[in-house]
Amino acid sequence: MTQFAAAVAVAYVASTMPSYAHFLPEAGGLGAGLSHPLSGLDHILAMAGVGIWAGQNADNEPVFRWLPLGFVIGMIAGAVFGMTGLSLPFVELGIAGSVVLLGAIVALGSRVPFGAAFAMTVVFGGLHGFAHGQELPIASNAFLYGLGFVASTVVLHAMGFSLATFVARLSWRTALKVGGGGIAAAGVALAAGLAG
Image 1 (cartoon, rainbow, N blue to C red):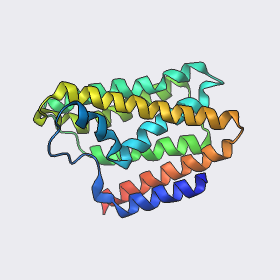
Image 2: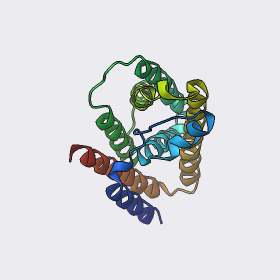
Image 3: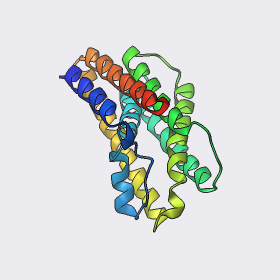
Image 4: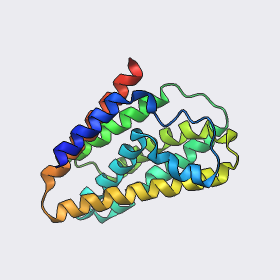
């Protein structure tokens, strides 16, 4: 089932490269903020991936429960920088790269020290936030849009975390490896679409 889901995700990404969630013409407030993270596979995979990574390690290292907080902190900081009008090259490629790395870490079950893992998620969140911060000045209510975006991000983290802990308790760790591989493959497809 997980292999099928991963294959569907990769096929979806390959067939819808232009549907990246960062080409938002207008952000209209709380509703737009809540729905926007669900509008792009790059968001869903990165945010759920952080939750999966946290859940995958939380039993052995409870501090990993705080890992998603790093993403949220980075995302908020990145959005603030994005709103200033600063230019940052290769943001979209960096976002695709974050999906690849998260998937690979989950698939390989890599033991990354919590400090390094937290720093990585701050950077990943910062890239996502920066891309959206550039859009926020045109929002009818930037604060409500950002609040909705953060809320949806937390929900995606929680879903990934819950999935990972559920799978771990059933000793289906192979399913996490296959799922992580699917996330990484989708990230490669995203990056290839940007480079093409």
